[in-house]
Figure (cartoon, rainbow, N blue to C red):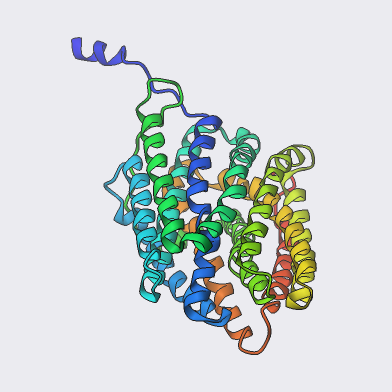
Length: 399
């Protein structure tokens, strides 16, 4: 009886809140933002054409898709804090590979960078699902994403400046230093005696094909996946082909970094999207944002390299829509997923990001054989228009 009474008196762990997740996400975002533009610019420098960059992105995304589905199986015996740490280690190795400025290093670096990001996304999503009440998601998610606005505003421009001035090692050394800081902060929050400590847990092993089938059988999860796929298509195209459009227009690499940084300053719109969602509903915000993104992508594509400053203006307006999508775009999944299926369904949901890089880059690789780079934004605009309709038509009004 004594051991039982002793155990009963142990203090219960307190749940992490919005500030904890915002802190981790801000540092993580800064580390990833430093080379987000450099990756595509360096690939262009190595390969010499946008079409070849699309082919490389397609091959990397296809391989990464298989890894994402297998992640919870591979990490089945790891606690979440170790899985998150492994993601940081992969990003460090990715930076070392990218710093070699070779085609082999570029391919390995792109693969490991996205693989580490996938681990970050899955583990952090599980922490959020365990610690934040569903009715609070519309408030907490925009705060977390808005807090990262500074990181995504400073990071891309700084990363390109380091790349131009000091070469590949300049940018990647800054990324590695940021990841070391992230690990230190993450482990400090985990071990702290304060109420912001993160609970431990394991990623459950499972059969990837069985989980895909289970996911597809739930229409609300499928729609949530399509919404995530649509907003990821926008950002993947923006981050990869936006800088290439600017460079091919003759405006220089520095301008591409500034445009990406300026676009990320608009992440503050994620906070206001949460306010609008609470007033008008998540469905209205998502459908309206997809519609705005469609119009601006078409405008950027039509302007193209012939009117680069006009194209930049459209891209920045599109970033406003993308930021709003980020603010509330994850809510349909977070509310639809069943508690006992969170770990298994989160990995399947994450494939929306890999598919958003795989499918568009595959289509763009063929389109760029015959058309200039502006065509990729025309194709994107048409798809975002379809997503606006699907969201308005099928997302529950009460969400």
